[in-house]
Length: 490
Image 1: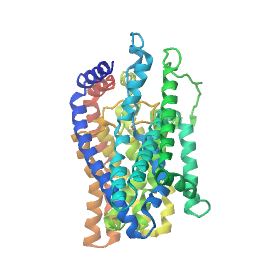
Image 2: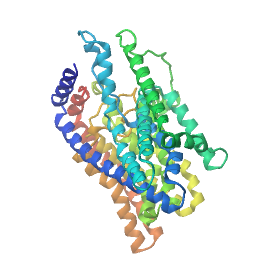
Image 3: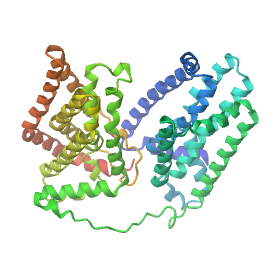
Image 4: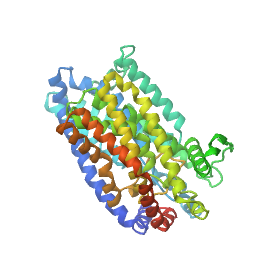
């Protein structure tokens, strides 16, 4: 049966309409996996000596203290990025195949995920270094086994929390509160979790406990999905009560107002779009890495305008790059109506402009780090409105990726979002403002660098009509390719 499932997966892969794209992405993912394995390997080997050189204390004790946060970050990344195994379950239910076999195969795919075994490249070399530095080999071995069991526990916790946003965000809020309490000295959770995790080394038999916990979670997840594999129950479509929202105050803008209404409703009602808004808010705090001077590598003047672009353009990048994919569910219906592309694109552009202005206002706390920091944010916002807003709309014409609005997986991107044209359009978004700023900064003064970036944004805004005419032609040219792509399921 396992061989049969693998055969179906292989056929689904090479028979897909996007086979060439899938193959290219698999190759890129392979090299990306090698890169991260080397990073984890370097961290595992160097962590012991870095902790010891810094004088923080016993490296194993320190590692156990921060392991709880390591697990929280891992769970967060899994929830946001890890894709649950896609098995076409409904057709299989008509065949003489046991439900338990289907569930075991689907859950087995998650166990061999990169999100699980990649951590071994950190914990294994760290355990080897511990043994080489005089720690008991048996204790380091049981500590490694216990740590890997906890990582696998995260895998099944993520499975059980899939599509349960309330549970995830409640746990994330608790973890954030505990981290903030430790930072400000109110309560240190590591005083309790550290000794418990250290017992995996000090008392080897306790390594059995994480594996018992892992077995329990695996059994719960298995039972949960097996008992819901019915067409009229667990696999049935979810129903919700419809709510009417008029937004009559937008009627004054005519057809533009109609499109804006649809976009606002889309953002409010769907999980994927709400996740995008949350991501754009988190982008506002991205500048703390640059303006606090906590990282020496980011102390160069050009990095300030780079931070300003991202702080003000979080929504623009995360939402704008998937126009028109946000409307993929009903895009064929829209294209059969008497709708002008200019009005459709204008509504998306105004939405991104409003979000950029709001992000810039919310980022006013950067004034605490000086006028220079907030000036970079303002200059970046003007450049985003005058240049990058056009580029993300332009790039969206080539990203033919249907979006599942009910899922927040792939919220950071999708395989079809990367092709030669979109990569070329990425260069002006990020590199061009740095070059423009550097030109003014080094030839005249730092203030001139910001002025040059602002002038580039103003110049782009001046030629809005001509640029939109060009973008409109591209969307019309790609129209039927986009419609065909939205019909593909894989």
